[in-house]
Amino acid sequence: MKTTDIKTLTGTLLLVNSEKIQFTAADTEAAQHIVMQIASGRLFARPNLIIASKRSLLISRTANIVRLDLDGDGLGGLLLLDGPGADINRAEVTREEWEDRALRSEISDQTRGDLMHTPGKPVTGFGQFAMSGGSSVFLRYDLPAPTVLDQRRFLNEFFNNSIFSFHNQTGGVGLVNPANIVSATYYPGAEPPFDAWRVAGFVAQDKA
Image 1 (cartoon, one colour):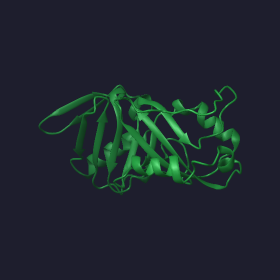
Image 2: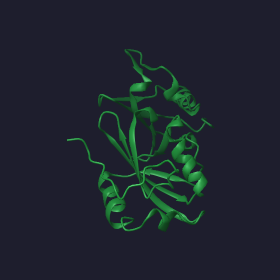
Image 3: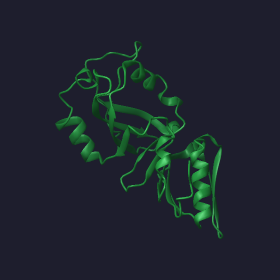
Image 4: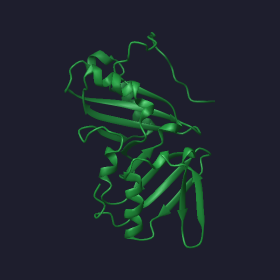
């Protein structure tokens, strides 16, 4: 990933205890160093993350990081870390938009077969990541419909991903730690594998 366009960088870490840690890279060299480490795709595989300023230092288990949000120029390459190509747009939306478009107005009356039966056809789908600590990430996907084989491969390999990336609501890049995804719900979702539980319907409720 090219990092020479990166001049400044700000970020926010969300931990499983709901603590937020905000930081700003000290200078251009520090910003590029941070992005290069993230671009390796191994951010959440390392045992810990150390953030140091001239006055203090923080160390956190990476297993306790729910998500990392970054703002700065030249971060587009980070959107390719989890594998999907540039033809798949993944954007964070609000809970209200997700509920309105995914659950009611847009695709509520359309089945998976209605939307995903023609490979290559442009489709819009929605997803929710329920995260450790009680937060959620709501996403909109714009993509050409994958083949049935690719849809099933996505589901079977879901938790093998080392990272999930998307455009966040501030215009930057959001990175989610798959180890802290409790469940993911998709509308309409991919074609399920043969060992999936087939049901008439289900309801996922937020915790009381």
